[in-house]
Structures are given as C-alpha cells and as structure tokens.
Length: 423
Ligand code: ADP
Image (cartoon, rainbow, N blue to C red; front, side, top):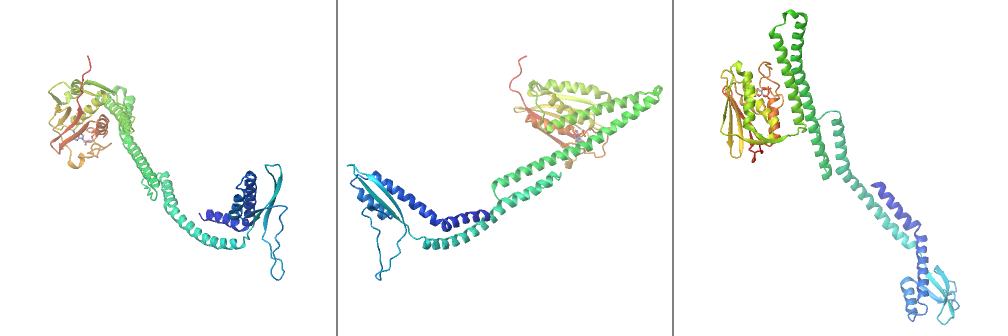
C-alpha cells in the first residue's frame, strides 16, 4: 500500500511541479490551434467579432490583424521598458468570401506558473501526509482481515498435511475466509473419519482374520502330518472357520461399500412375507439340531419396494444375533406387523439382553458388548452396523427394546408398496 501511494505521489509531484510548465505551454498551444480553427470556420460570419471577444475573455487569446499589429510598447513612467508577458503567437492567412485575404495573428498569454507551483507544492505536502497515513491504516486493516487469517489457515493446513486431523481452522475476517475455513474443517473431519475407519478396520480385521487362519493352518497341519488320524472334529473346525472368514470378508466389503456411499440399491417390488419365511426356513433348518426354534407370526402377505437381497441380509443379521444371544429359552419370535402404511418386522429373543449403557453403541461398527471376544458366541461386530446403513439407505427405521437379562426385540420398519407386480 505504501509503495502504491509513493508511486502515486511521485507521479503527482512530477506532473505538478517539474512538468507543469511544459504541460501548460503544450495545452496553450493546443488551445491556440483550436482558436485558429474556430476563426477559420467562422471567418465570413457576422458573429466573428463575438467569437473573437469570447476567445479573449475566456481563453486569454487575443487576435489582431497582422499588418496592424504593433508590438505593444509598454514603459514605466521613468522610461524603463516593462517586462512583456510571455505569449504563444501564431499567424494565419484566411481567405474571405470576396476572394481577398487577411492575415491574423493569435496571441495566447502565458501566465507565470511559479506562484501556482508553490501553491501546488503545499497541497502536495498535505496530500502526501494524508496518503501515507491512509496507506498505513489500509495496510493494517488488510493484513488483519485478509493476510493474518490466511496465514493461520495455511499453518493449520500444513499441520493437517502431516496427518494431524484434529487440527481446527479458525478463519475470521471476510466471509469468504470464514467459508474457506469451514470447508477445510469439514475436510479435516472427513479425513479423520476415514483415518479412524482405516485404523479400526486394520485392528479388527487383522485380529478377526488371524485367529481363524491360525486355527485352519494348525488343523490342516495336523491332518497333513497324521493323515490316518483325520477326525470329523478337525474337518468341522476347518469348515466353520472358513465360513467365518468368508462371512467376515463379505461383511467388510458390504460395510465399506455402504459407508463410502458406493452401495447401489437394486430396487424391486417383492413379497416380503415370503422372503422372510424362506430365510426363517433355511436358518431354522441349520439351528434345529441345537434345539432352537423360530416362530413366525404374520397377519397378511405384504409387498415392499426395496432391495430384496439387502433387506434379507438385515433380517438375517437380526435373526442370527437372536440365535447367538438367545440363552436358555431357545425360542425366537419373528413378528410381521402392519402399522398404518408401514410394515414392521420384529425379532425377539429371551436371551441375555443388552445393558442400557450399551444400547446406543451397538449400531456402531465393530461394537461388541463383550469386549473379551467370545469367539464361539459373537460375530464380527458389523451385523447391526449393516442393518443401520441399509435401513438408512432405504429411508426406513430400526431400533431395539431390550432389558439386561430379559432378552431383546430388534425391529425394522419399511413402507408397504402401493402396487404389487403383475404376476
Ligand atoms: P456381532 O457380530 O458381534 O453380533 P453386531 O453388530 O451384530 O455384531 O452386534 C453388536 C453387539 O450388539 C453384539 O456384540 C452384541 O453384544 C449386541 N447384540 C446384538 N444383538 C443382540 C441380541 N439379540 N441380544 C443381545 N445382544 C445383542
């Protein structure tokens, strides 16, 4: 700002003091030329004398016939010659209507500029002081409102680029700067979320993958070393662990797709009741041998418009949890209830239930109430998180009512389809 002001002042000083004389003469010369042109245009007009008078009065240019013109001899009373004011003189011959010609001389008076220059100098001193103060003030304001906040944002951005995602951007001053810092805060939050997810994923996945892999390896090694001693129990362990591994891999793929928003819904109108029944039949057959019974209560056959594979997965996750946590009373109740234009599916078990302080967190990724990782009883910790994401994607609702020691009722609710597909 100061540099700009100095440049401006320098130009003003040069123009108004050093070059003032030359510029003034240049302007007077130009004005004389204009006057000559004006007279030429009106040389035969009756109002030529008015024009000449006007030139004299307003522009200080006097016009006289050349042959008549006598250099004014001005003397002091003591006979000394008075100093003549400087003039710009131009003589032109004009042709009149009647063919005769006259020669006119134009005299543009040049007033001395010295007095003007000193006045201008005083003005310029004042202007210089004023401009310097303004420049300093503007510099301070601009630095406070623009440069400082940008500097701070830059510092925070450097911290962010080192991977410290908890850094916060405090933009102030102009609204654009505030907006920029808000955007950067959101970006930092998102980055920290992704980073947390990555760390969680690595921690959980490496733990969950390593244990079954170690088991499979040791059982396979035993079978390799003692082929004659292969037992049903060994093959059973290998099969179960392989199943657990593939379940885990599928869950991880699903959850990462759901969380990054890449999951596409394959919507269709289908018979929900029939789909629930099929899942119950298939799962029931598997757990029947453990004495678990699944009871399905439904009032009617209901169609919904949704992604059948994903809704089946939601239901299956709830059912499997109910089976895992069902405890001694091994009956699981599945209910399909109509609530207005919605259908609600409930899965109830009378098992261990969930403590009040855990209920809010069970929908989070990898949340397990039992931190000790009881492998036989618990799964990946992703099941309910998938339920939550799929229901949110469908615009449905979900929830749980549970009391520690008395069992839990998990539910999800979706809109009933208005039309059934033509069969
Ligand atoms: P997991 O694979 O561990 O079951 P989920 O996301 O499905 O993961 O469930 C998260 C946690 O919620 C479980 O670890 C369990 O503690 C609790 N939970 C889920 N369903 C039930 C249930 N029916 N009864 C009691 N606790 C449950």
